[in-house]
Image 1 (cartoon, rainbow, N blue to C red):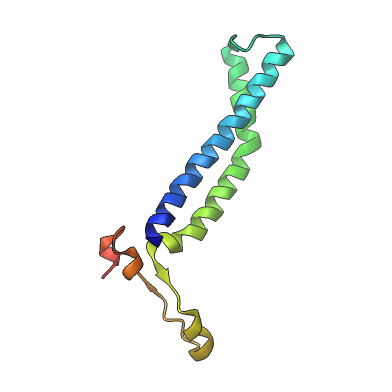
Image 2 (tube, helix red, strand yellow; image 1 turned 90 degrees about the vertical axis):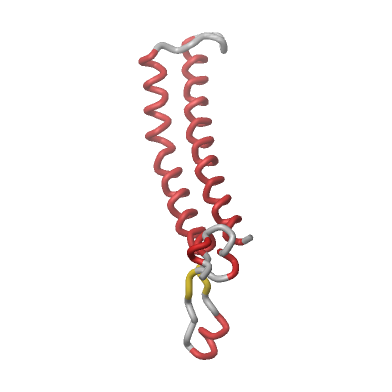
Length: 113
């Protein structure tokens, strides 16, 4: 169950980052149309649309990449079933770290040995 949640969360972050990038680019396109006095149904020229896409990518690509990287790194242990026994870590100084186990059997069978 936990592994499936991790995999679904990773897919959700990819979709969310795409939405953020496209939404900002659409805002730039709308601002350009207002600046040029165009109607909502009118289309920008290819060069104007390319400029909006490039500006949107420059402005939002870094936050999108940073969010994706930190989320993926945070959810990978959940997705692969990384197990750490914190009680044993503090009582015996041995965390008993292992990958797989009961929570990963359904999503990644070869790890659930």
